[in-house]
Image (cartoon, rainbow, N blue to C red; front, side, top):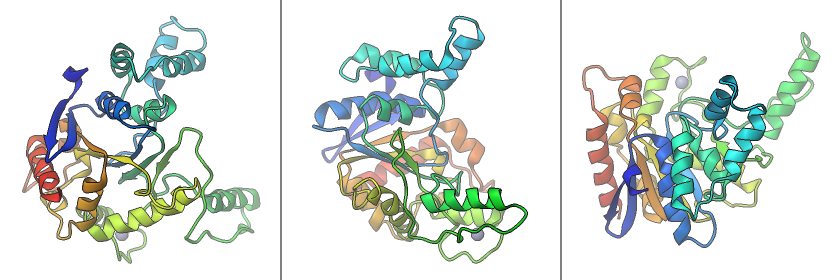
Amino acid sequence: MTSLFDQFSIKGKDVYVVDDHHKALAAWTLIRRKTEAPPNLITIDHHTDTYEAFLGYAHWEAYEGRVADQEAFRLAQVADIDWQDDKSVAKAVENLKHDEHIDAATCSGVLGNAFCIQLSDSDATPSIEQLAFDKSMEENWPNPPTEPKPKRPMSYAPAANRIYALPFDCFIGCQAKPHNDACLARQSNEIIETRYLDDQLQRGAEISRSIGLADLEAAPYILDIDLDAFHSRRAITPEDTSTFYRLIKNAVAVTIATEAECVEDLWLDEQDRMAAAELLRKMLAHIDKAL
Ligand SMILES: [Zn+2]
C-alpha cells in the first residue's frame, strides 16, 4: 500500500501525497483505521470527482464480453472492498478509474459524507427547490414555470452515495451576466481565499444541515486537495489564508493529489507557468504555516 503514496508528518499532522487522485483511497483507508467512525471528506478540486466506483472497469469488462450484468459486477466490486485488508484496497485502487474514488470510499465505509468544493459544475448537487423548479419548467413549457425561482438558503435530500458537490455562482461580488471566461479565471484565483471558502462553506452548511450536520467542520473530516484546482500563481498565494488554514488545522489528516497532467492542462497563465512539483512545495509550506 505504501507504494501508492508518500507520507509526511508535518508538526504531527499526517499528510499523504498521491500522483493519481484515485490512489488517495489507500491513504483514506489508513486514516479510517485510526478513527472510530468513517471521517467525512472536504475536497478542493477542479473536477467534481463524483462518478460511480468501477464504472469504467465494469463497462470495459462487459464490453469485452467477460461480464454479463455490468451493474451487478460493478456493485460486487464495491462490496468486495474491505478497508481493513491491504490487498483488497490495493486491488480496488488498481481497478478504479478517474473520478471514481470518492464513491468507492463512501460506499465501502471508508468515508462518511463527502463535500466537493470544485470549479467545473456551477449547479453541482441540485437542491429540492431547484429540482422542483426544473420539473415545473419542463411541464409548463412553453409557458412559464409555476414554481418560484429557487432562492437560498435551499434544502437538500440525502444522497444515496453521500457525495455532495457544492454549487457556486462566480468570484465573490461578480455582477456579470452571463459569466464569462474572464470571470472563471478570477474565480479560480480565489479558490482558497477566505471570502471564497467562507461562501462555499455556507453553501455546504445548507447541504449538511439537511443530513443533520450543522456545518462541514462539525464532524471529523479529511481535507483533500487536488492541485489541479490551482490555475495560477495567484491562486496558490491567497491574501487571506485564515479559513484555509483553519481547514488544515482541524482536519484529521490531509491528502494531496498532484495530478501533474491536469495541472498543466488547466493552467490559465501562459506567462507564469507552475508545474505540480512547485505547487506541491507551496502547499506543503501552507500546511506547515497553518499548524
Ligand atoms: Zn462572473
